[in-house]
Length: 315
Image (cartoon, rainbow, N blue to C red; front, top):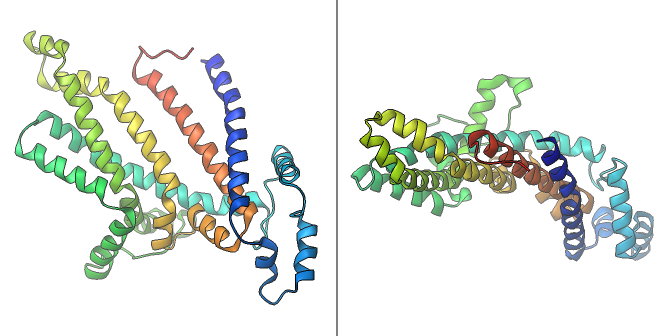
């Protein structure tokens, strides 16, 4: 186990190097001059040129990249052109709302998707199976921004059950208020993932239930409950864990839309504002952080496979 973890952690180095290089090049291909954005429309060309020289924008791209990477190794993630504080402080104040929204979305998708997928598999070919399958298709097809607007219109405007937008932290307002503000964006963000989890759970369970050893267990008189939960569900857990982990990655990267609709001060909204203002340092730091979290999520999934299925070996 320790050797496997060490190998995987060492493998992160070339992955993050390639990711950082891609991020840096893509950011610098975006049209616009950060120096001009910082100084405003009334700045003279001389002032813009002087600021570009001060910030190092006139250096060749390889030199700028090496300067940025060198800062990362020293714990310096850069400096925002428009926001006060260090980069870690800026990201730290925005990453918590994004993680909370993502956890609510994945929790909703899992708690709804797995039971519905199990019911559809057990009642394969019945009316309930067809209804659940149609519901999963709707979930996969409905964009998160449209789902969010529909939820605001129905739940907030018409029924007045939940607030339409905003963010309330746990420390300042408590768990109940925090969850009330997180439910709508979490459902909107996790609705697509719910449809995917339903489909994966249903197909994985059906494959296990139709296996020969399940027929043998039934012939030997094994109870239906034991067959379903102990054998079918546990053997289908690898596929379910995979789609749940991928849902976490997808929600983490797709939170920008729901954060904009529901006015949540998360990483997505921070990145969108930074792109609009040409705040390159913030965009580079956020995208690199999200990439690192995605890679770590994949590593955690591999470890969970070994815990769920003893046939999976970590060499």
